[in-house]
Structure formats: structure tokens, C-alpha cells
Length: 173
Image (tube, one colour):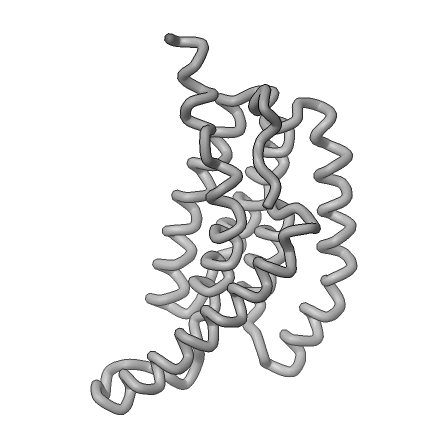
């Protein structure tokens, strides 16, 4: 896994702001997906914008080319993701959330993100099916895949956020 360069992020307070925003928006996305089975476009858009803010905070202006390559990766995966929507394998909000989170994840970590997402999604589907047999009010007709997508992304991203608070507070000490 990739970690921070020993000198730390270029603009630590900006990177910390973006990371904290991602964590807050992740909670909102999980709440919306579990409650209404709908992830608002505004949440996905805000997560995507914060990815750009984080890229600048992490690498300064030199972080923009790295972000541009992540945009290319999202564009490459856009067609298969759209096909998942067409065949009703995934909802539109899930696909937009996945695309927004891919902007945060380096290409080398994307296979891990996808593996954790698939495993988490399967676990959620199994648990929902079992709970629906016990409790009649539990919906198992659709799977809220947002929590699984966020689990995959955060599994990769949280180690990258390690030390961010220290980098922000270091100038104050």
C-alpha cells in the first residue's frame, strides 16, 4: 500500500479537510442508502470534488497530474459500470458513488478496493436475506451496495490518512 512521503502532504490542512469531509459524506451516503436505497447525486458530486481537493492537499499542484490519471481510470471503467446499471446489477447512485470514490484511490490500490467491495456486498446480501426470513420488515428485494463500496474504498484510504492529523498539528507544536 502507498503511504505518505516522509515529508508529509504538501498542504496538510487541505488534505485533512478533504479526508474529514469524505468521512462525513460517507456516513451520509450509508444513511441514505440504508434508509431509502438511494444515494443523492449531491453526495457523489461532493465526494468527487473533495478528491480533487485532497489531491492538491497531498501533492500540491503536482498532485493534479495524478488526479488526471484517476479521471482516466474512471472514464475507462465508465462503460462497464454503465452496463451494470443497464442489466440492473447495480443502481445508478451506487455507480456514481463508485466512480467518485475511484477518484480518491490510486490505480495500484483499485483491485483491493474492488475485492473488498465485492466481498462486503456479498456479505450484506446474505445478511439481508437471512434477516428477511426472521423479520418481516427487513427488505431483501434490493441490496444497498453503498456501504460495501464505501468499505472497499475506506479499507484502502484509511491507511493513507494515517499521520494526517500529526502533519496538520506539527506546525502548531
